Amino acid sequence: TVSGRQPLKHVKEGRIHQPLDHFNRQAVNTFPQRFFVNEAYWQRPDGPVFLFIGGEGPIFEFDVLAGHHVDMAEEHRALLLAVEHRFYGDSINPDSLKTENLADLSSQQALADLAVFHQYISQSFNLSHRNTWISFGGSYSGALSAWFRGKFPHLVYGAVASSAPVKAKLDFSAYNNALNSCCLAVVQEAFAAVEVALMGGNVSQVAVDFGCCQIPKDPDDQIELMQNLADIFMGTVQYNEEGFLMSINELCGLMTNKSEAYEEEMKIYRSTSEEPCLDISHEKAVKDLMDTSLHSSRRTARQWTYQTCTEFGFYQTCEDATCPFSGMLTLQVDTQLCPLLFGISQHSLPARITFTNTYYGGDKPHTHRVLYVNGGIDPWQELSVVQDRTEEEEEAQTIFIEDTAHCADMTSRRVTDRRSLKKARKEIENHVARWLKTAAQEKMEKRGV
Image 1: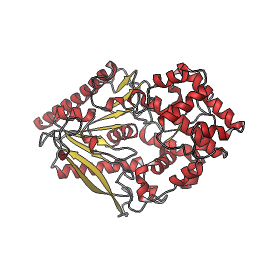
Image 2: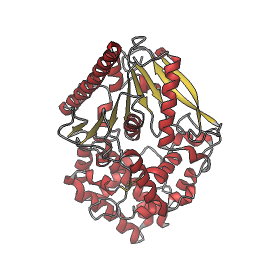
Image 3: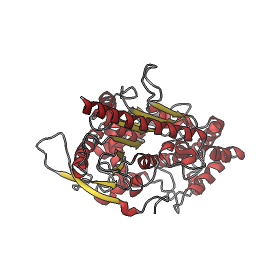
Image 4: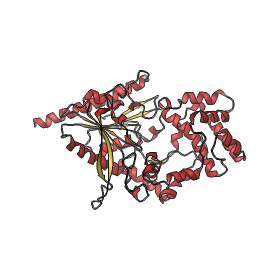
């Protein structure tokens, strides 16, 4: 069994052949899109449908076996679905990940996939207007959940969008604002000390201190080192107590306990890494991103980098004076991968970001029956919808959990959950229950006409 629930035998895996390009009527090429179905709770034939949308990575059986959406599916006797995003996991373009083939990788195509998938499932399970669909997703897939409702309101009745960055942003320097102010100064001190050591020519000692596979003589390798170190802090802040490393308080406690911030940063890195050494070769990192073979699809970095270049930006830069990390992490450094990997001009990026926000509405999307859930510690809240539009709104469309991090609401209930998280989950449950009740009433009224 999984999470004390029903056996895995209730989960069925399937494939649907999707058009590679929904918007070119002359194109005939397809790719296999993977999905999972769990019928264990479903009340046939009219029970609701809960759709878990995949993001920038593979989906798993777990996605229809555990999580808050599964808890609610059990309560409402819903059919559970999880669908994988095109070009990630096993839902891969059979013609490889070469740049010309990545032309069909976009959020717009992904939403069209969902529309076709809706039709496919409706036919396969003999669904009708009596089955109310609700979509769920977190982070990028949370944005897709909101956008699916926004663009296809006749297909999905309501959407839960957890920690959803619905606003594209080229220079996302605000990501770094979420670091706990109590240890901001000491983190800045630690990164400054590493920079001083590198600039002072002590590259061999830095390599020893951080267990580097290479000596960071090359400026690009030095930037790679700084990015690796910053990633520890970014990951800790983004996931906090939900993460697999340590919480912000634990990290800050370690950083402020001792007098030498550099030494503490060194120890923290070594304690979080399971690799024999830290690979800081920029050349190797670029080579990995240039790997277009299908076996590399599991790594997801090439595909997601393409989407940041063509649609979203989201570059977590550190040029602002308030940034606690290294000033080496610039927009120029982040965006130079776009021409290098894909032949996409850096100058074209602002227009691409603007189009995304024009197409979806940014953080003022005017959607109806979309619930945006965000945590107060999560850096991505900056790009989500955190305030309701008007006081006249018939019901709140946002839930803000003061002391939780990225996608914390999506996990199944735990005894150790904070009170604020329990309260937020209850609010989400109330919204979903109201949507299903309203949908049922609307259907009754139509039948009565």
